[in-house]
Image (cartoon, rainbow, N blue to C red; front, side, top):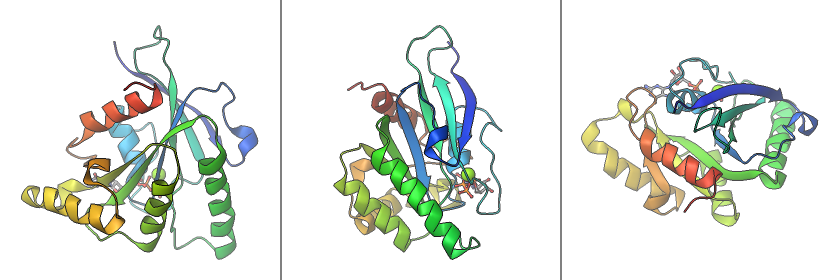
Length: 202
Ligand code: GTP
Ligand code: MG
């Protein structure tokens, strides 16, 4: 049965969030880390979420409704593409406004069942990555940290880099996976985590 994925809405304030109470899994991470590309890759759709080589592409909370068992299946959920944090070109006041909107979403959204934090595998975690990871350690919401752009480093270095990043983020290595939107590395494991978390399977 093919997965069905459809864009539902772009939200700039909470009134615009979907009201059907389906579970949600959100993608968080720095601008340009590959959140939108990851959504396209796991859904095997090249242009569902808009991507760009210029940071700051995604500026709204974008909700994609997923029917993993096709349209007849009962179990639907949302993948939520978020604007990146640390977008240097935005003005300070705009960044503050965004941080407030996003933090509120992450902290209060009742239907939010899981958070995927993306970090760039090529670089050490940045201050905002460390802050996000620290926050994830403290909240009850299940999370997974995805180290992206794994295709940009030597294959043999992937496990040790993942280990090093887990240490820097002070997270268990089990909470991290390596991913590439280019090669599909990590796609299966990530999809399994998303399904299990969204649909409350063990
Ligand atoms: P914002 O919407 O600005 O927050 O960015 P984003 O996190 O959604 O990043 P996006 O998916 O738009 O990707 C940014 C750039 O990185 C694009 O040029 C992508 O093609 C590239 N990219 C994303 N994931 C990967 C990956 O796994 N490997 C490689 N090589 N490039 C990637
Ligand atoms: Mg994006």
